[in-house]
Image (cartoon, rainbow, N blue to C red):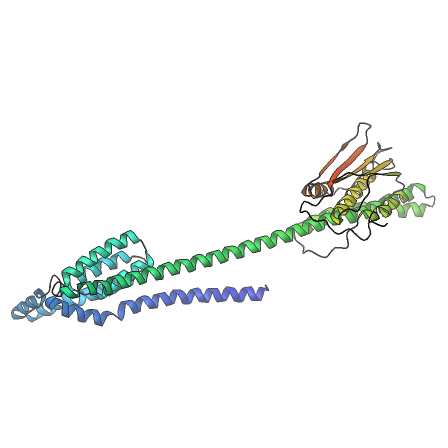
Length: 424
């Protein structure tokens, strides 16, 4: 996704959150204000004959009116207006403190038979709290309050309890459960998106690592050959200008190997993956061995066992092992004899590159640190093993066992360049 697309998505999410918060505030005010007229009417009607104070309030107001009209008006405000307004105000707290709204609505229902705040309170508590045990207790209290407040109409009590208590409570539970489900689905979608992004990053990192190792195998091999040829020319040439040019080439090659290590480190972390060239297989060993022989390395090549076509992945791994072994021999034991052995066993290919002790001090060559590590990981992942160490005679040996059977039960396609393919 482009930066412009991400910025547009972030702006949309911000505007949506702003509107959602404002919408909830507007909804709370509507719940608080719109029922006020109807609730006030019920307060007037209920005070005449329903609820615990039914009939007492008009008598009290009439008595106060005979004494002082101002007292009667004040008492009317206290009994008719303030409770209704207070109940409406508690609606604004229905998300954070729904229990206060429940208490206020219970008092109005019990004393004045005003059921409007009770309907809103039960619905809001069911949506935002959803504690079914506490909700059962509140339902029992409200049912008792309905029986007490509407005892003058016993036949309608069951209907009133069902319509005014059960319906908002059940509907609120459904709304609350649905919202929780939607929130969980959103969280799951966001988590899956994060996991997919993480998997994509891991895939990119793995590809970068693979490219870095291939770069080491290919470029370091070529540059090492260049340095060896330049060193041989520097020793054998008679022309001073040729000797100087060969020395410059050898020095530049060493510097290139040093810089290559830093480039490979950056490639592992910061650059994008790029297409790579076709990977060499066992059919390319003749060319590889010929190049090193031309550089002055005496190589003895041996093959044993039942030579047969091998999967392409096995051939690539074997080629890289041979390439790494010859490169290391040239770095650390220049001029020493090298023995290359390939043994075709029943279910594995044994690759060994061993060199004799160095004839003289090795020329200092930079190391990338990726060659043997990458090879070992590649071989182990395929079910094989790789070892490298000194020989009893003072030389060095790199030996690997590469599995030739496919663990998945399917055989890979044999490379077209495989000299051991059937019919060749």
